[in-house]
Image (cartoon, rainbow, N blue to C red; front, side):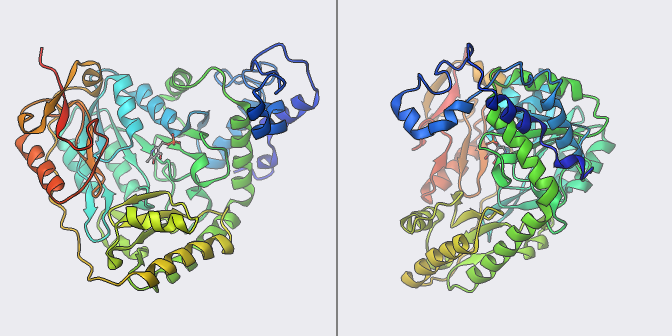
Length: 485
Ligand SMILES: Cc1ncc(COP(=O)(O)O)c(C=O)c1O
């Protein structure tokens, strides 16, 4: 990385200079720098409306960058070690859709983890590609998915010799990093293109104690939510192509397909600034985040009935390392579900990232302070002091049924659907995705057969009181199926 060049913020500078010129606008947006905005919008956003600009060819064009935006994206590529980097104003969602669209066409097979983010399914619907699933490992004690391991990748390759690409989610939401470098090597040996959903990894490249980033592991194309764990505005992400990736021009074209033609320039400027921040100060900033998270983890583990896993997760074959800035706080020793703990924490003005099983996930970043960490610890301490400890039971997760994919997600999307009473669904093609938490891995997805095994799994989960996510009828009295011709 060229540290001297990384001091530059070409697009943020260009935007600032343009705003200082106080041009009289005869272009969009219609509120004309705030003058015509609704009163409440003016009160809420104030002078920020004066900089609400997008689609200004005077500045640069996101899809045909030739000036400061091009330089900003080149600097990002240099900072992340990519051959080429694209900015996204539609999050990692657009990046994932674009990378699938770029490398897969109708009927192509792509290997994906069972718990892939919904944007992967969107990419499959848009491209017409077929999913083939790699089996994911699951940690029953911690109630978290570990993702696929090299053996599950090998098995998927053996079963789907026709596959064109493989997509990994790395690291998981909980910060668990699989054996990616090894899996990339296996995939490349079999001629597969490697796509990585690194939504939770924009910070990884900047500290040696964090898991290795996906580009460093040899991936071909990597989607990162810059906004999730580094400093850019919500909705902003980057898509990186490795040096020499032959599909790079198709990726550029696909990024234009899935994004607005009026990108907000704040979003683009914030990506420029976040890149500069990480390039110049990333190591110290991540050192701070790691320090705060390590302190918090230690103190959480000292509270009775509460636990927070750490480096010992590498005892699982599928896990190579852990992003320690993620705090998966488990309340099972107090007999509380994640949802219940979330509600209790909210009464203490603490909002967590997500809940599942008996835990909540708290993200620690360099934006945190000793004070914010103390607030979290205090909230957890209060819960520990006001609840009796109970004997902790490991969750005995029933094995997930083998998926039987018979229809491309795109075909299922366009198919006529009907709601069918669950007991009548055996043999039908499912038209929606049904997931229970835990394990947070879909039991069935659109385009798959509702086999007897799938229905028995659903019955068992419902009998045990688990709630589903993603289904049109959350009681699952009925399931959306593809209507037969
Ligand atoms: C694993 C994963 N991939 C992709 C996304 C989509 O990212 P974005 O919100 O930046 O569109 C998310 C969002 O939570 C995610 O968790």
